[in-house]
Length: 552
Image (tube, rainbow, N blue to C red; front, side, top):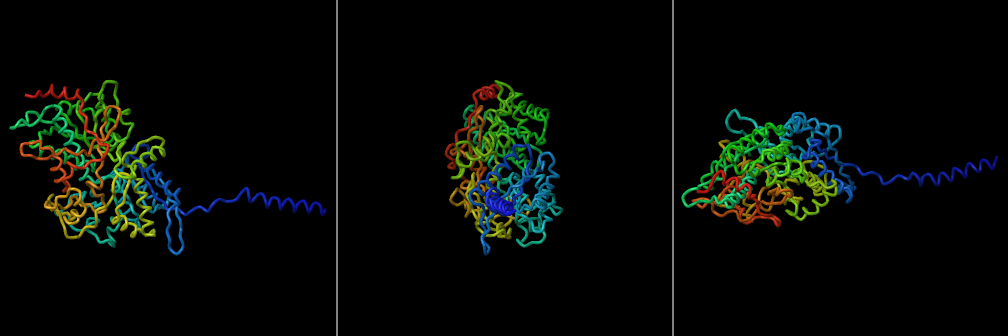
């Protein structure tokens, strides 16, 4: 009996020594800061949005997490919770994903909002009703009014926009629209500046066409003009750009030798028949440039139909689908067809071009993280997550008011730009150039931002549209990059210095005129990035154009 008891005790001792060693728990899991990412599943825009945020969180957590000291130091991990919001197909109901992320997943920050038609109900259905709200870093939608009051998106009964429509009009502690102070844009810069950037690319390509085709000013007239069509989506973000491009080409046609011909718009999901009809009209009008304004899947249909119809015009503008490196392969109609060859699109990243000290490492790491994908602009969600982390550390707090104030006031280097937000409105300066009394940044603020980079103080420019919590645009800040497809290769071609040579009889300088008109800057003759190449105009296109319009 004693022997049995001894064996039992011995066995228990052995188990006591061995089993704890087999099941020793690992380090105590760190508490989580949840960042919600609503994204359109299955689309390149959403894939990049989610991947950029996930990559940033993985890096932050691997580097030790986020430390907050309030008495004792607490180290947090960043947890990304993605939620398919189906916003390209069903924008009106995308807000439900954000509601889930905040109220079920416990998100303390939101990074997303690609489609304006989805971001509006996100703001009105969720953020306007949450108590407290959460900071929302818009990653994708460019519509200026998302930051300056949704009332600006709708007609005003009085004809002017009264005080009380959004961020610039309310004190920070407002109980009626206070949530606007938590809304920031991390990519891209807003619609007004997108218009300026597209026009900068356009003037460069138009001048190159005039040079290659021999269509210069003959001393008394333009014997031949560059014919320009506008093709875009019939969406909220695109409308001011589509209209603005047509108006600017028409306004400056005599000075620079352009000729506006037509505008065609369609859905961001338009089928091949609709796009084909638009391109048939463009080709029938014998255009040399198609100004594009497209963010959705229709960009692939556009490129494919360009090849199917052998369109001999250079697309220049915004085609989000064309930012990815698989665009050429996705749009080639057949060997020998032009397709997406020579298309120019505004983007955020370009191979071989480093806009900041973080660009090269990010591009390499992103391709490793995603198994070879090249980032489009929504991958800047990576920067949004880092901005949140840096604001938490910088304020040593999780208080959303402190964090929001910190982000608004603190410049930072992102992977694509020296990022900075425009400051809070001074509650005095207005801009009435549109016939509406809109708040504006005053000329002193603008001069302080741009003095070293080409701002013309005598112009006394007040920033329009209103831009609080929006990215500062221009040299030394966010500019974007123009990339051109040259057969199977994508190369950067804008901003390219040296395109201010007079083209017209009055000595106008096209990019200077455009950038000064749209954002108060004179910078196109000197500003560029290493690695930017010249635009390429294929000889076959020039031959076709000269057949249409033989030079006298």
